Image (cartoon, rainbow, N blue to C red; front, side, top):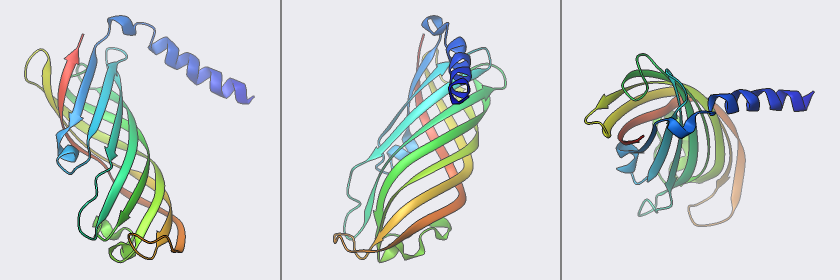
Length: 191
């Protein structure tokens, strides 16, 4: 029975991807998170007259400076439904997220991990969410895209006494609703 639950989604995905050789691809980078020292790259492919699939990767290996730590990486695939046509106008999306983080010595929004100013948290997260966006066409190849999203995240973590020591003082899991997307991306289209 498990094999059938795997084969059916795989068959549906392959049927959608059958004509990719003649489709449009987009390569993009989110300028908003890039300005926050989180280099990123996304690729989006047109699946049909109304659907696209985007896969983005964010990575921040840089120290935050001083007594702060903000290192992470995450992937975020998203299926998008376009109101008019792909790569132009309004769209709605459904996305997944998975990532790993190492954060300490700072204040996070929404009261997440209240002890993070004096401790270091290391862990991973898994989530899903929905988004809305708009794609502004600048020229036949270049565009700007904005997107906002919210979703549910589950995080497993270990807490450490200080930013540089290895003494573990606790751990646990946390579930919360949070913004999962806020982007202003520069887009290059490839036919």
